[in-house]
Length: 308
Length: 320
Image 1 (cartoon, rainbow over the protein chains, first blue to last red):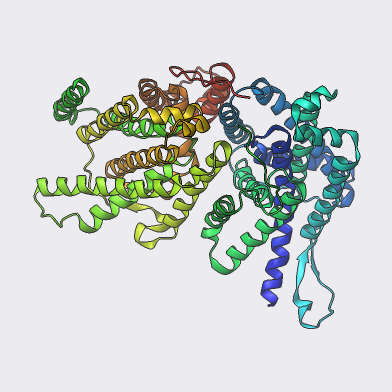
Image 2 (cartoon, rainbow over the protein chains, first blue to last red; image 1 turned 180 degrees about the vertical axis):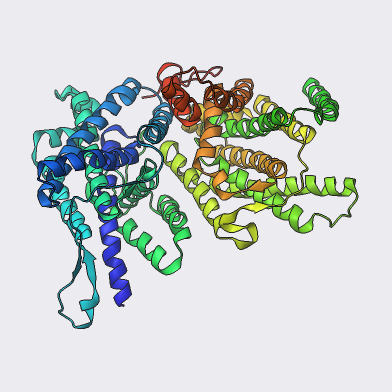
């Protein structure tokens, strides 16, 4: 039981990262109806942005690791990743807006491969060690039921869960209570009607890409403070799992992406803990195939009529 | 009748060339066999991605099934028919075909989701199947798990590679050009309209997957008995992308184009490897040349932006 609860906590920490990445997939799918294959690599770029910005930020804060460094680094990385996301959309996806879906899909695969291999070229292929921007320690959970006192959590994992929750509520506020959010929802509902109502579709799409990429960038930093080894190919498996999470929750659905991310994180940790680490990826994809065959709209997704 | 004659002549030519090819420079021989294997893979995938319009990203998975299946057969039952060279060769061909059938069964399983999914989803699901197949191999002790499988006898030569390549091209071309096979194109152009015209789209989609998987399995068997060592990581997502790039560069739905692209993209990495040794070129250029995936990815992006139909393909219909 104790081990199970400990696995559950670890799974939640991992799942919160997937949730942040999955939101980007879901938002882009909502407005453009296509899967941005390169999204996982923006997450990788976020981690590398932190790797290069980290030491400078540390100097700014007098070489003292702490929350100030973390927060300022998160903000800078999120802005940087938002710009990268907007840039990718502008260069690669915008010229293809009215082309067949397959063309956009192949381009997205191309962009993803370019970021991975360009990253290996620029940053070097070997794993790098992320700078220490936070003094990590192990927190034992308070002793309420006696035996559970052996449970604990790394400070970094707790922080990443907290940051995820804050970002999720921030995103919820943007989507539900701002003009831009309303425009996003309108575009997702019907792009033609939205543009007839005076919404500038291009601006909204760019904003969506920016927002999703900023969250992926934040996820990159939050992973790196937990597992300080980063490499240019780290986005592939994280991106794919986040995508599975988005589909599991119902793609196009924001709470669904968060829920799916957490579920995938928990499932993955349980598989590693109780079965075998080599089955991790296969089981995550097995979940994807099952969901697509049994309930293609996902756990929280509404069914949608196919337009002929 | 004419195409059968061409096939026969090609097979005879393969046999003749094969007797002379043994004295060749091993490096060039290696590339040549690689070209043949890639032609089989790309032509098969073209049936799914190009002619039927179902985007599959897991072709390396089928190749893995064929490679491991046939290797396991020749390793375990290689001498069951006797130890004369004819018996061993017969056993090898049977193992290849059985490996192909195993891959075809895998293709049948992967083809079923394609009945409900299309586009991006199908791409990810096929990618997922590729990972699952890889995962199973990695956990299977009989197949060498993560260490890889070695010790296969060198059977694959110029003749077998190009005979199977010619056969693949023949089957795909004659199928697509027959009245029966026009269903593939109908599925690609508009699935709903095809269904309304009484075409059994299910049958065509599954058939395309099964055939493509069968040929990929054969290619895998050929590869395994040429390299004599296979490793699960050799059949990963990147390998699948390699094959997809051949199909896209050649032009989806153009067999000639895809074969040419297979030749070009097999030679290109070797050429680039040479380029990266030229001292007088700038350092960054040599680094980029060494990493063929950077060029592949740029090639994909630029092709899609400027010429999405590939070098020899027919433009896809513009859809909203």
